[in-house]
Length: 182
Image 1 (cartoon, rainbow, N blue to C red):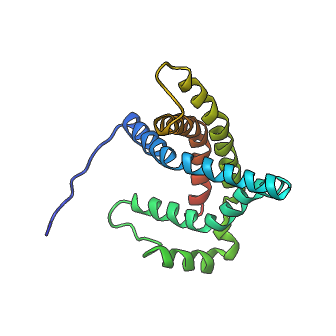
Image 2 (cartoon, rainbow, N blue to C red):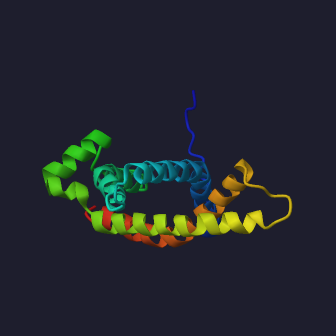
C-alpha cells in the first residue's frame, strides 16, 4: 500500500501538446479504419435500397446531442481535479455532477456548448474524410506499399494528425464553454 505518493511530474507545454497529439492520433488510428468500413457498408446498403443520403448528415449531430451531457460532466470533473488542495469541490462524482448541474443550473445546462461541439465534430470529420484518402493515395505511390492493413493504419495516423491539428483549436473553445459556469 502506498502511503505518500505525491510525485509530481512537470511536463512542458510542448511535451503536453506532443503527448496529447500522439494520444489523439493513436485513437484515430484505431477508429478511422472501422469508421471507414462502417460508412462504406452504409453507402452500399443505401445504394441497394435506393435511399437518399440526407439522413447521415444529421446522425453525427444527434450523437453529439446525446453525448454532450457526459462530455460536459467529464470536462467539469477534470477541471475540478486541477483545483489546489483545500479548495472545496462542487461534485463528489459523475452522478453527483449530473444532479448538481440539473439542480443548480437547470436541465438545459447539460447541453451547454452543444453548438460548438457539433461544429467541432463536423470540422474534425471533414478533415478526416478529406485527408484519409489523400494520405492513402500518397502512401500507395511509395514503392513497396500496397492496399493493406499497414497502409490503412498509416492513413488513419495521417488523418488523425490533420484532425488533431484542426480540431484541437475548437476543442479549447468547447472546454472553455463547458467550464465557464465553474
